[in-house]
Image 1 (cartoon, one colour):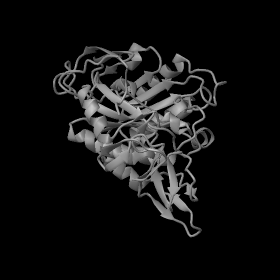
Image 2 (image 1 turned 90 degrees about the vertical axis):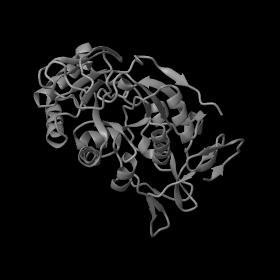
Image 3 (image 1 turned 90 degrees about the horizontal axis):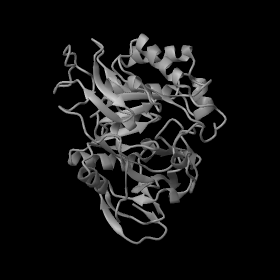
Length: 379
């Protein structure tokens, strides 16, 4: 690994030694090729940035150096925090447990409505205020009793080398891994990245090419391809989230098309989360999502065969709770991120009718609750 800028102390990661306090950390990558005109094309995602020496891709963290694409933020984070797993949101993956969360900076989409724009849209290295090796992250998560580590806040696809090394270190300690992602990744890196992931919440931002082109600078089809891959060719537990934006992706027509596609292509047991937009980033003049819209979306999903549809970013105990797909009994009660009644047996079956609840469960729910614990990694 190369280091540019000043440095003070070194720490051993799973890929060797890197400098903890360097201004810019670079790490080799392999998904790129050289073009005839001398530029280097990044093959990580469908954006296919073509870079000259010294240029960064739209994601900000992958750059052309010495005729190769390097990752410039390996070992650096915008911060670490212990969250409830339901905050990702994942409702069927070790409910009630703590997840050790972190992200870096940058993103390979350009969403005008980004809710984490201070990190995902950052073009400042100072955003990366904390540092840790993959082994340190795994150790700290394990010490804090976290069942999993989440790559979140910004999209882990763009820092996949750091995420993969961290996942390997986590698995060595029995800690699971979670990716919170938009799923905007090319075929080869997709297979390598998700091979190290236990659960994913994929942000299906809308169900129209118009929306993706206009508001994210991306395309819909690559995301759909990722979803089908995860469901058919991986062992990753999958849940979906759609942020409903008034007048953009919340029509009954689009919600019907989306939820029918999910049932037909992913099956009825993939949970869907419909969450509320609040004015932010470059869409501050757009009104917040009415709670009624979320309820409508949930009802449409259920009517179209989705077994587990949830509302989010609003206080809706009914919309946040899990019911049996067969008999309708309350299985997991949720009030925001706090669990209430638990009506699954030790094998994850409904205690009324014995129908299995799809997901990854333990005999008892976690007890982390709704707490949020910021964590400072020590140098």
